[in-house]
View (cartoon, protein in one colour):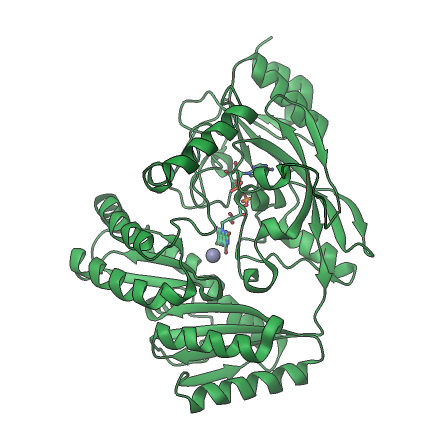
Length: 466
Ligand code: FAD
Ligand code: ZN
């Protein structure tokens, strides 16, 4: 029997797709990578995943693992050879257990992030991982990429929010590491090896996640700041005043919000167009009234010191959500505008203003008339530092002609300022060559040794990361 027929026997014929419109599985979110799979296979259980891995090993066939296919580096779609099995975990979406006293939730890897947040909320608890793709990305993908998002400042990346995982190894064995332990020093940390490995070491089939108490009130404010240095000063002040209650600190450049004005005119913008807008979020343990008083005092001090020019504090949940919508609409508005050159970079917060001044100048000199769409998680030193072509220039042509040169300018400066070329999106296919060029040779040697040990035949997500 051929592989596809054996896969049908394993998961049921209706869960092995080989024809019809498979673009949702085979084209990535940015539409930059278009592949073709031998078959799209949608298992429902860990045992079925293990069975698929065994079969693919027998047929010397490689596997690309996929969750919600919202990844931004081309790691979740097959290559164009038509020879890879695309393993989509969307049907593995059950909640396995909730332990309120231990503040943990165990879910299957295909659970949508938003439904995990909702399950935690139904039990009076908080799962804080939050990102604009939360309505379609999955826990498996979040852990596969070690996703960041908007609450990292307070709660950490996906890695920090995961206590245990279940993995199907490249040999098709199941490692049950679903511990709900906050302390466990029994040898090498296998969990953290798999998290962030982008499906190249094993397939995560379930996870035990860390929950938190829900805050009494969440309050949001927008502040106009004249420079990025002032934004960093505001971060300093907010940290000093709010401590751990500061749960979000996002920055949005002028062009980023202009794109939202253009493509999402239905979204109200409370502040007039300004060089930089900061979105602050506070999670208060007392009450909404308390949160607002603290925010108002903070912003008043910032106004007096000349750090902030204008500010708006949300007075209702609707207003607060509307402020977040502005931030979350930026990648969508950018996608509507057309292809652009994206950089997901991390820097020490202290280095952000100098980096941006140097990179802006270098890019504008190299690409006169181009537009810098700069926004991101400033509280974590993580910028989405993107370059859009000059008005009137076809976006795809600008991307094709300019990407390599723009990347060199940006990543050389990132290196000089002690930063990273991938803060939260990962390496995938898109940044593989950059990683090989810029990661230290010792680190690359160790990473290759890990890959060879855990996936000796190179069957899991080949051609990604390394
Ligand atoms: P996929 O795209 O399906 O896969 C991503 C990678 O993980 C692939 O390499 C895949 O092979 C691997 N993978 C998937 N499932 C598993 C599994 N079960 N086991 C092992 N490996 C697996 N990311 C951020 O970090 N922060 C953000 O703020 C953010 N904002 C975004 C906003 C938008 C509008 C979009 C479209 C994306 C955003 N992303 C962000 C990127 C993306 O949403 C995240 O990386 C997300 O975690 C990917 O989840 P997914 O289920 O869609 O994974
Ligand atoms: Zn982000």
